[in-house]
Length: 111
Length: 115
Image (cartoon, rainbow over all chains, first blue to last red; front, side, top):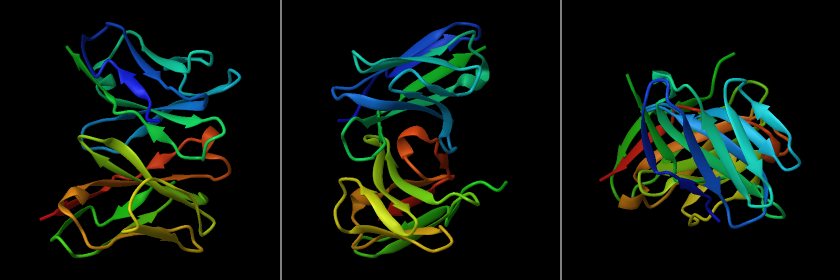
């Protein structure tokens, strides 16, 4: 039931783009994205809901393919501050209301 | 607005002991969720409390328990500690309602080390 994230890690130079993927074997109700910097608490980035609604930060973009039960987080023109571990969390349809997180994608942005 | 606070921030215990961790949510938030974070397993859901009632529970043994008070503050207790319980324990608060559509605000966590 745990969503699978890919890649596990990615290294970028400032200004480059990255895509982080999250996929589930179960039908999803919503996908939640969080970023955690080293030694800090996870911070909310975005929620994508079944049906197309999105809530989150203007500078972050993401997609949710309901047919494939996949979500992608798009990080464009990356900045040093984007470094951290990105987690996707999912709520499944018809399941109990537990937010199940993937194992994370570690993003490093170098100057 | 003050964020989510957790106490203590660090804790060292020995096997067999028990421990209580505390979480104070953001004012006005009625839901508190607890997570265990380890390098190997990532973030794993422990349980969620809403209006003093456990609303959801993860797949952890009965040694892990929690409660929520009328002011929404929450505690979690781990009895008979094992080495594998060493982890960062995070609590997160949200306004309430359905967690499926709401963002969670995480506290800084309590780092528990079991020797």
